[in-house]
Image (tube, rainbow, N blue to C red; front, side, top):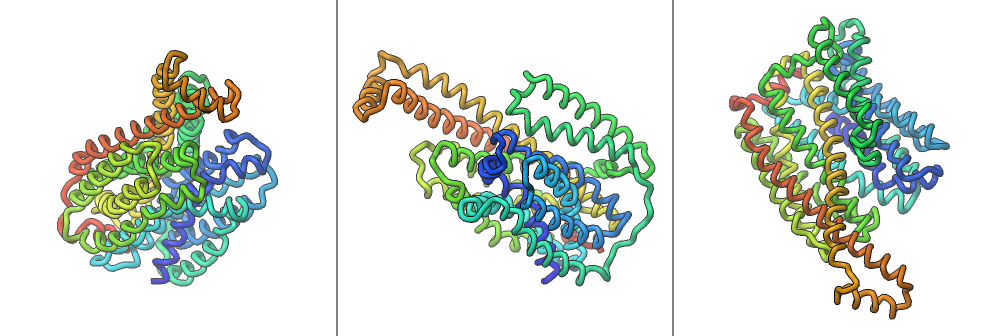
Length: 502
């Protein structure tokens, strides 16, 4: 029980850190005297470094041991969190966020591997349920907690809260798991593979994060980053497949269940994460919600996720996990279709209903797909498989965020142009609106500015509806992808993964 709590707390802290800073960006940028656009590097720098470090987990754990690596990662994460809170300027904060992302890399895959190794085969599904609950609830809790801390205390505390949680998790993990340290072997460092990984992942992440700001492929910088990422990826794949001691074990993709599970998990997570980022943005920018209010509307997503996850975990060995995953995609599609019908008059209750229902989808999403992905993998390769599948998932999350926000902006521009066609001198509605604003004491320029803001609000709402509707359709199209995986024999799957981790 204590081991599960410690591993879950470490995972929660790590995942929380990817989303908690989102709502605090204006406060951080203002405090450190930079523009909000420069402030986004607080998130980008962590994401790039984390994406590079996650797939190295398998190699690092073979070299240093799973328990030793996990405990060291937590303690270094605590140290870098403390230093981030003390950062005197933006340059220092970005450097420290890079370090924080690097040391955080092995935490999620290793928490998964250590948790699986702590439970007998029969309870492997339950172990996966406990692990996935923290992974799913943390991205939603991030904006709520970050908003409250920023509004009521000050932004450095979004980093300081990691200190007591991390120290507690590290002490408990070391005291319980140190006697079960995995076997280590002195592997040579694949420096070429590591350099190629840093180059292509770094270029890809920076391209995804800065693309919107630089107008994507109309910018020479974005094109250059895309070319470097593509050439780097091709060189990386060729090198890793021919290297005797690769830094990332790409041969795992030869397994049908691994690539099918990782594909469904990644696309599904990308869609989910893109919409998790988009909804609070829309609420805060165009519906007048504060950071705390937006977080409060999104928090109930955890209710059904927490209630149903143990149930899914207990039954995963009896029911075909592919059916569970297909059900999750159906519910996600329903939730996003409901959101695609929102308008600017939507009250808190209307916004809450699909959020609560989404908790059902989340409970049936992670556990079956992780079970499919890790099924039948040998004991010594669990950490590597978990690291690689988490890397693909995290990268898909970055893609999802970039694509969702870009399409939202583009569709909003289109809707703004279409609605503006009706705002003319000859229009009765326009004339009555302008005269009403003039009688309220506004100058003609102020009145036109107010009308433009109303058009903006409607345009961004319609654009959000478009993104939600398209996401719903993609979730339905994802259902056949799940069935590309082979059926897992009853009692296997997560149990195999647990046995492997033993």
